[in-house]
Image (tube, rainbow, N blue to C red):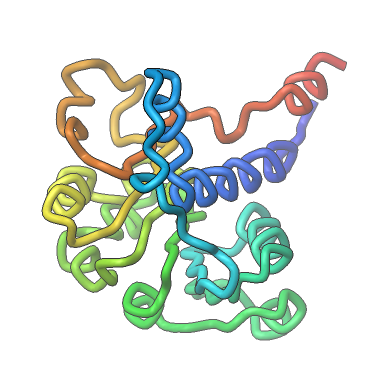
Length: 205
């Protein structure tokens, strides 16, 4: 069975889930409450209505993210050299330069393959263009972000948060995960963005 776009919806929905989890600090609030704490003042969420979502790449998955994000009343801008003007008009999004997107987006989500051109696309210099109040989502491919620099800037509160489903080296082990220790508002999932019961059942039939 050849289903090249079969996991697009699943991955796009995981992206939205990670955005919401960061905005509402759901993972940390869950752990805290399960410990019998009641830290309402600690977990004050951020509304995503009206926030500017910047997509790096807008192919099949990115286009679905656009649709879902607009349903959540977010504004969307995109950096994608391959996106045509007609397609951007159809999606109702704004095409911007890479630097403009990094400097003006509240949420930055990557939807690009790993190639020689995209490896460490978000390096230290590019990461430093991002607003201190912004967050980064990567459910695309490991290697497109310099993870060491991202961890450093998160620890320095130069970036507000991040959610990663993919990593430079997989599977992640205890030694590898040490770089992420002690970082607040960081969500890590084990490359499950493309996996769902719906997707698994499709492959079973």
